[in-house]
Image (tube, rainbow, N blue to C red):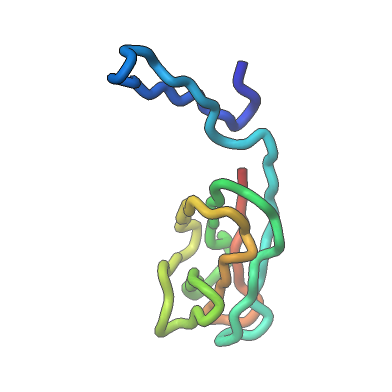
Length: 113
């Protein structure tokens, strides 16, 4: 039986006419929030091993949040989120993600499995 957050994947193996079954996902759930202290200065998400993370721009943000790598900025980013926008990334650790913002003190919440 799969644990919470796990998905059973069945793949047909045509060489022997059987299904290969494997569990995908994680039984660990982490969540948190991260703010940008000073707009224009990227902030790294904390070190949490995961398989997937969903990042949500906070409800009280008045500007955009920029998602990317260590050099993320308002002019160079992978995704731009407005209030309550979200993005889900398949990634091995949340600390690979950096955020920047238009305004001081704005940020994101996240949930990782």
